[in-house]
Structure formats: C-alpha cells, structure tokens
Length: 527
View 1: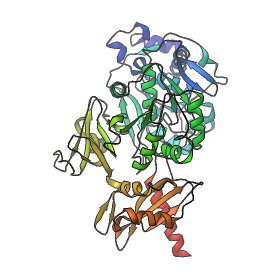
View 2: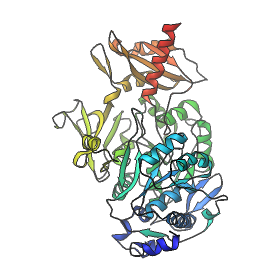
View 3: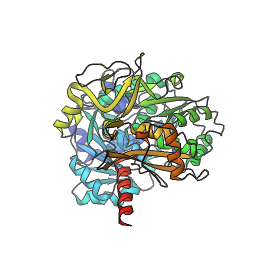
View 4: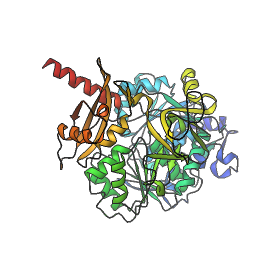
C-alpha cells in the first residue's frame, strides 16, 4: 500500500493537529505533547545543532508519511531502535500520532535480543537510526520490515506548523515499555495515551517547568524516567540538551555550564559520580535551578553533599515505576533535610499508601508494601494476564517495594522485597548497609547483596567502587561498617571493582552483583 492510498483509507480517522478541538485534541497524546510550543522555540540540541519546534513538527510529519508507506494498521506495534536524537523523538511521536504502538528498544542489547523482543511484542516494523542499522538487520532476518534513518538527516531541518493526527481512544495502548530488568527478566508494560497525559500533567504540576527551561539529558528515552523528561519538556515547550554518556562525569558538568542548563536528572549512579568524581559540587552553575533524582535511593551522605554543592538548585527526590508510566511520588525540596530518606507523598492524581498483608494501612513506623492508584497506572503487562492480575489488579499497583510512613504521611522505602538479605534470622535492608558504606567520602558507589550460605541462610557481601583520588581497601570499608552497623549487618566480605554492573538506564543490577560475589567465592575455593 502506498502512502497516498493509506492516507485515503484513513481519511475519516485522521485530522491535522490544528483542526482538532478539545476533547479530540487530547485523545492522541502526540498532539497533546506538541500543542503549546511556538515554532521558533528550541526543542532539541545535540552535536549537530539546534532543532526548533517547527523543525520537529516537520520531522514528525515526514516520519508519519514514511510509516504510512509501510501499510500498517492502526493499533499495530512498531519497534524503535535509535540513540536519543531528532530521529528517535520524531519517530516516537510519529508512531503515536499514527495511532500505532511504540516499542522502544534499548540500543545496548544485542542483535539477537532485538529480534527476540520485537518478534515477541508482535512488531510489524522496526524504525532504526543509522548507528543501529547493522543490529536492525537481525530483525529483518526475523521477518520484520526495517525502516532506516535516511542519510543526511535533511528531513529534520524542514519547518511545519502541525502534522496529521489519528484520533484514538485515550485508553488505547500508546507504547510497550520494557521494564529495566534489575532483578529478573524484563516484561513489556502497556502504557496508554491517557497514562502518558495523566503522568505528564501531574509532574508539570509540581515541577513548574517553564518554556525557558533547558534540561540536560543523560538518560535514554527508552527508560521510563528518560521518557518522562521528554514528555514534560515537550509539553512545556522547553528545551532538551543531549549528553549521550554519563561515564565521564566532568563532561556533564561542562555541558551544564556550556548550555546554561536549568535542569538535570539522574539515577543514583549518575549523582554518585558527579558528587564524588567531578567538580560538580565546587563549580559555579548559576543557571541550574532544579535537579531530579529517581531510579533508586541516593545515600543520605551523597544527598547532603549534592545539596550543599549547588544550594541554589532545588533537588526533587522522586519515586516511580515503569508500571506507573514514570512517577508516583516526590519529596518537596524544602523537606529534603528534615525528612531524610523519604520519597515524599503521592504526586497530584496518585493515591499512595503503605499496606500490610491484610490490605490495611500500616501505622507510622510499621513496614508494609507500597501500593498506588491513579490514572497513570498501566492497564497491565503485554500478553501476561496472570502477572497483570498480581501486580495491577483493578487499577491498583502493588509496587513490590516495602516501606514505612511517618506521622505526617510521608513515605520511606525500606527496600525492594527481593533485595532484603535474610541472615541468621534477621531481615537486613541492603540500602541500610549501602548507606553506611557511602558515609566514606572516598567511595563512589556501593551495592550490598545476600549470598547463599549454608550456615546463616545468606551472608552479607558488598561490592564497592573507590575514588581514584582517595583509594580505599576492603579492610577500610569493613572497619568503617563495623563502627556504624549492628554486627549482623556488617558485610562478611567487600569486593572492590572499577564499576558496578548497571543496566542500560544506569541502575545497579543486584542479580549481577550477587553473581560477581559468588564467582569470587568459587575462585577462592579453587585456588
């Protein structure tokens, strides 16, 4: 089917964005995301230059035409494999605008995994950036048509005021997002058009982003946290600046200064590197006015160093899950030091509670599971009704995280249920062991795990990364932990490594940390 015959066949379902009026304007989230920004405003900045919103709308329109030429049917999944950039943004919005389902794939996975995930999700096509073309051939071998980014990328520099939009049920699937897979095999979470709008509206409600904001992006858009940065800044008509790697933290500091960025966002591993491995806490960054942190707990010591280093920038500690489209709670910056370790309370539109096994709210200080409800909660996993019923029954999300509340209703995450260490009859939160270790200024990162042990059930072991400027031995770390932890919580062994195992989103993979400890034990036994 040609693009022209496809357009004719969907004439009754497709409109120009400028022709849509509420509520139709908002049924398709692609139109909602690009509804506010004037064409001359800057949307995206990378190594090739700046892309205006008029450029971006033209790029979306071009990608809609190219996708239409594939002859796909509304509601069909389309995989997207590319690094952060204009191609990724335009392709993602084009898939949504066409009424199809975007299936973003991490660029870090190998060709075989790309083909497996795309086939499993039922993808009818794969849109691939130029740098990912070779990997995309594996998907082509699996019978999935591949549409590659065109050489020269000239289409990204056109200008347009709007683009065609296919009307959809707001509760129709917009994306299948793979979970980060830090504790097990990833699943695909179904995210609807309404899920994205609800979460974006809520985040904008407390972050108060404005059109003059400029966010430095170090997180991939394939990660739900990175996607939320894209959604919120496009909706606000603000700018995003590409920074493709967080491996060298000083380059992040320089990029913040060079582009006068007003915001940055990261997971704990990013902030650990910035605070302990760069000039971030000593460099003047007057334009920086807000920071976002999510994706796991930042140790209290590092958080205090971060706040002290850039005191004029408001730090928002947040909590969320892929199953919640991104965000579930935030802690107001003015509460950071008064309620250290808290993830705050539910964002606007989200009811967040801590419940015991009987489904009753726990009293302050008691431990229960964090449970959420709101329009941003996914309707379920793709093709997994049993797991959907366990995790998201009747629109209520069971997070799998254990937490407590204080007298004012502020929530504190104790640990993920599967990350608790069970040793000598005690239940030990791995985050408590890690926080104690990170009090050492010479540590950049720490991860504590339970390793199977015949005598105690699980023995506590820790893997750490030390700063090159302040080398520490395992004995230094153990001595420090003995001074701050109960005897049963002190690690039996500490391993030093150059970097913790992390996934494509920068989150520590505890499963891999545990395997590292087991491998080291086997090596000792055989020597």
